[in-house]
Amino acid sequence: MATISVPVLSSEGGLQAYLRSIRAFPILPVEEEYMLSRRFSGHGDIQAAHKLVTSHLRLVAKIAMGYRHYGLPVADLISEGNVGLMRAVKKFDPERGFRLSTYAMWWIKAAINEYILNSWSMVKIGTVAAQKKLFFNLRRAKAALGHYEEGDMASADVTKIATDLGVPEHEVVSMNRRLARPDATLNAPVGEDGGMERIELLVDHRPSQEAEMSARQETDLGQRLIADAMENLNPREANIIRLRRLQAEPMTLEDIGKSYGISRERVRQIENRAFDKLARAIRDASARLGHDAPEAAQFLS
Image (cartoon, rainbow, N blue to C red; front, side, top):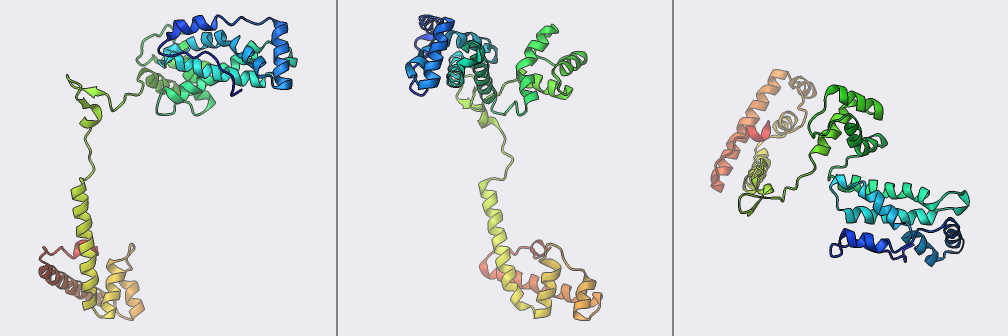
């Protein structure tokens, strides 16, 4: 099927020129369609497939025009429909006894539907069969109830549509709002001269690069100062500081006391003394480096 060439709807020629060009391909009689289908399915005759495809291009255009209200280019709708038609020709079994147009209609609509779901919104709309059904039938259901406005529907109308389509009411409300407000690009120009894009007006609440760099440098400095200051502690003091101040889940004074065979109050005294030693060592080291001394508590708590 990859070698089949069909007329293309281009921006230069326009829709009317394309429709005139495909009218040059006649609709096939039943007998000829059957023989061409057998030649392609049985012998891979590409010319037969080409004739089957081109004779149904008007069917694709007619179906595609029914999807114009989704705001997508008609050329793309027709192009996707033609892809579906080619798939139908490839899979068509002439021995089943029905016309190619009857079989191809499903493939054409499926290809166009898939294209619309993937292109209409950057946020995927239809993820399950019920949502896809709602997407493609909501406008028709609203029209049947005489509801043509884009705003929220009355509760009774929502209930009626949800019941008829077999979907929850909240999905009807959500889909109706999404269809009324398609995606808007952040690159759209704003202002009288259009010299600025909408994205430039958004406020970035994240810290600036300078603030992040300063915070990292302060953290690195504190870690180095603490590592050096720990050298001023004896092994028991250093271990108690690690267990009480440098763990995600600090040990209790009682548990540490049991491991050393001392009271919880004695552990608290050792911890406080060790903390004071660290604070003095950090202040002295900061002074030698010419930095303002960071508070030891911010790194050890």
